[in-house]
Amino acid sequence: MNITKRIIARLDAKQDKLIKGINLEGWRIIGDLKEYAKKYYLHGADEILIIDSVASLYNREKLKEVIKKITKDVFIPITVGGGIRTFKDASDLFLSGADKIAINSAAIISPNIIKKLALSFGSQSIVSSIQAKKISKGKWTAYYESAREDSNMDVIEWAKKCQDLGAGEILITSVDRDGTENGYDLELAKEISKNISVPIIFSGGYGNFSDLISLNKIQNIDAFCIGTSLHKNLSKIKGIKSQAKKKNKLIR
Image 1 (spheres, rainbow, N blue to C red):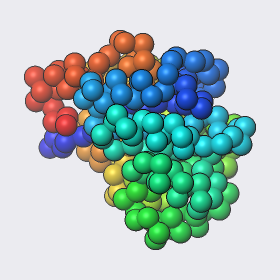
Image 2 (image 1 turned 90 degrees about the horizontal axis):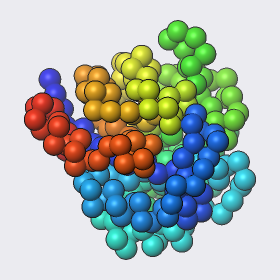
Image 3 (image 1 turned 180 degrees about the vertical axis):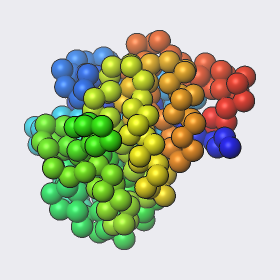
Image 4 (image 1 turned 60 degrees about the vertical axis):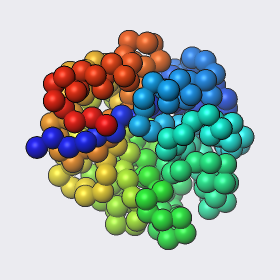
């Protein structure tokens, strides 16, 4: 049975710049973050995901001021992550206009922050961001600190714990596939979907429409992230939705 799934434009950020790398490293500047967010909104993205992918690494100030500017022109849900360490960090981002926050490193260091944030802001606004690296067939480890530190925790078990603590959505980023345009890690998607009941956002590897069709067959995946292919103008959201409509695949 087909279900309606969201297309989320993923924007990795460094201050007010859009950046992109491969396997969450080797970052290069693509352009102005605000302009790309507006562009993808106008092109029909269902949501925007902004991850300050080097904030944890450099312990930088968050995206508060940039988010305030973006929300003046973008009127779809915006999730913001990267460098969120404290309750105040999260609160500041909500006050800046973020609809949801994505949390990774702080949750691995102190898991109860998920519960605290969910109780204060509602589970629907808390996304557990998990950076997954494959270590063997059917096994993935959760990474943090911009995918440089190994938590030694199994991705599936960690995702289940995040759900139990109150995360309203789980964002899975395949570090191995990120930026490669070689297709989503379907094995990982299947394993996650078997064990998680809250909405799952899957990121890392989109190259063309056939990748989306393959992931679409996994029913419990609620949303697709697309980044590199959009930034390189190899794919356009309106085109993806048009193709989906023709093939009777229910994409929002």
